[in-house]
Image (cartoon, rainbow, N blue to C red; front, side):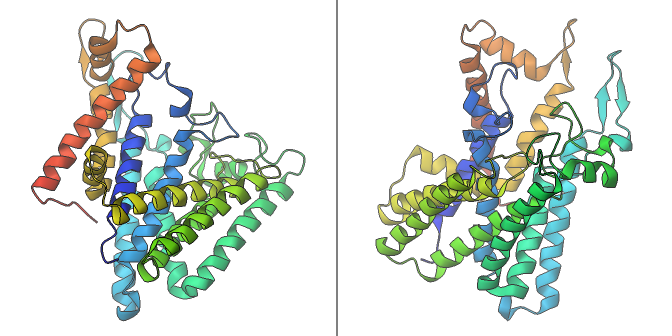
Length: 373
């Protein structure tokens, strides 16, 4: 199977879903499945970042398949370049446009002391580099062993660092270390306190997730030729779901501290969903609107992801009228302000924003413009 079209569809679907959950029209009225779990548990939204990391691993299986023929200097130059660009893009998105409105409705610079170091792209960068390093030095079988070691060791560290309360927001070991190393002001404060869900301690299960995606991609490249191999791959995915669920009774499924059970559970769902896409797209040759939209998003994923974060930020700085309402809120109220069901209207506004991003992705694809790093 020379061309793995399903991967583009999988990646594009994940991007579209991330835009949906990241950009509600009204942050006070969101369907429960379009929000992260409060702490333990797994919603639709909690699946998306693991899906993205799994897709990164899949893509690496294709982009690095000729690594043994490359000189080490060329290999590491490419890996280092992509890692640095991804990490710096993440920091840029965190602080763009480097100014904010103060309580007097005046713009002021965001001080460096409040720059957040971590985020989605930063975690992808760390996972990408780690996966590239591990498969280079440990090969495929070694990478599987390392993945298992990461998951088990992370569980043991979480538990034995605080046996009385290891998995709560207050009891998880990583936060104290993050504050000591980076300072509370450089961490995420969305939980009402200094706590970063994309920090460097919970990244180890995420690295395993990327490695699982890589191994799945290698299997597809080398062995997937018929429905029999696809069924075997699906059974692996279902097994991951089962093991992750069973493990959750001892180590709860939790996105915010990226527990090992969460890694296995979401990897299993990602792999099972990918198997369904492979069956429909590669074997049954199914196409349609879903196929087209996701394929377009899958072609310029990084660019569209960044754009989907920049547009709302820019809109929030454009104030309209004497009420000083920003353009994002103003647009929502103009379109859906009189709707009774505010959860539905909030989601529909997000769908319209997906449509706007898709128009851009569609234009880029029609013009054969592919923005990569």
